[in-house]
Image 1 (cartoon, rainbow, N blue to C red):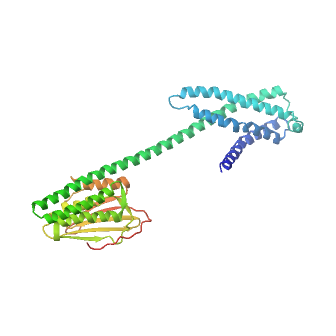
Image 2 (cartoon, rainbow, N blue to C red):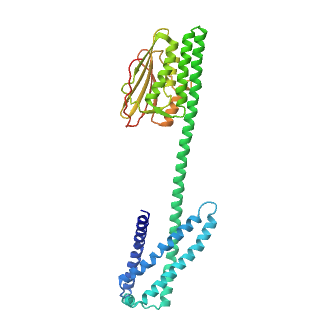
Image 3 (tube, one colour):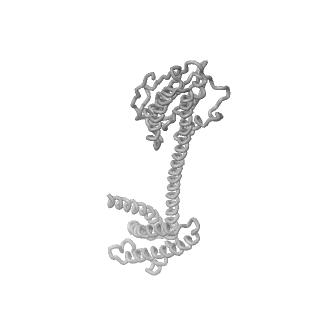
Length: 378
């Protein structure tokens, strides 16, 4: 495979070099015929091919020098001086070799018919070729150096872009980990506060039950602490553990409904993304009701978008309320985590009917996700 690749590259290079050979041969043919010299176009073209194919040898040498002596950056002056000396040297060598080939070709008997009308002596022909081609070789050398530097600059730019993407990804990961680290102490404080309240109320059995459920929840949290994304099924299972702790606090007056039967269980979602939403529903909605309270968890997918909703029938939002203006960090944390992942993700809180608030999260999901979750009322 490597040999085939080299052959293809060599063939491509020879084909490219044949283009200027054809152009110059045509130019010389027309010019010499205008002077009354009847020269064979084939001979002129063959000699021009010999000339330009010399750059198939000299070109890689120039490219190597261009990579070694950059003409940009701190060492550009030294690089330019070195290329000036190398350019004159290589141009001289190329012209000298071409003069030797041209002179030798005129001495081959079988080729006399190609060059019989050239009036110049070998010495005059060599001088003519040198003055006609030396500047061309300098231009070719300069073009190769310029192209090599442009290719190197493009490669360096692409590498910097890859480094920037890697850095952006690393920063996003670090930011997500920092945001997640904020959630765990916050949730733990709230739960321990509830357990303490139960102990003060001498509801020891409920406190012990809550401690056991807290242990299950912490084990699940620690098991997934290194995962930024988890399946929706695992996220909902974690949320069920959390809500069972809250149910121990609110007792029979809390009614929880799960409407997740049509959601793709294997859709990947940010870990623990729903817990702050539910915490907010308990703190600002359900906890402020004196009678029976309701909490609905909904999940569905349509047109490649996953939508998660949390409804509570607590007091409505105040006029002018916004996520960016709320004093707590839980909701802002959710917004930041989702938008770090995908700027098109949306988080919204709105009053629902005459009573209650619905929090909605929506973000794109992979089209291959298709496992349904078992649902039902809890």
